[in-house]
Image (cartoon, rainbow over all chains, first blue to last red; front, side, top):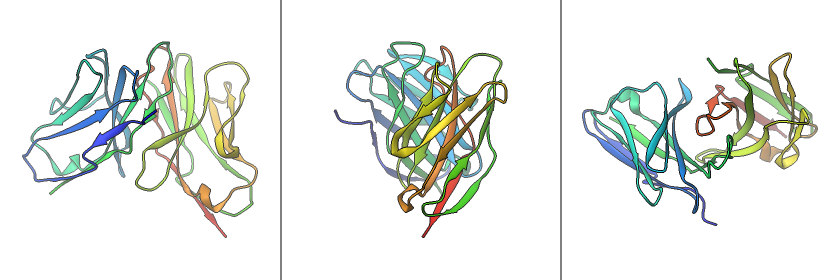
Length: 114
Length: 114
């Protein structure tokens, strides 16, 4: 079974631009969660999508948004980029068939904002 | 609110020595507990998890952890480390029915020296 894939792996943008990151979950997984990883704040939960609906949301400004398609692939969008948005963005997929399901992480997208 | 504290940001240790990485959590409800490992430029890999039952949990690569409810701790141990164990380790917690949301500690950088 193929693992979680994220594209692109690396991205460089300038302040004020917007960016879209993509995540393809493991086949059969219907839940996708997104996390931001920075040296200062560590790993922080952004949001979770399940069956095309946002199920959970972290404490991030509205510039961070996401969506999920019918094939469970998910995209995350960040508008009006700030220098502080430079981070590794990780997505994780799970089957979400019970109160707990193991999350499998992708390799991440490294976003650099100049 | 949930929180996770990893008491050591860096742990240097010699090869074949034992190691313990400490993790404390706070939560007002039942939780699931996890340890993840992250190698450079990679995503997170699950080492082990505590969902219920036996408080001693065994994971991959010879790691184990013990859940202590009274001390709200979930320390990770390995009796003999290898150079290849050099990585960053994250403790995480998830509340029941919040399966898509993980709260992470700040991470512990384990450095194994020859």
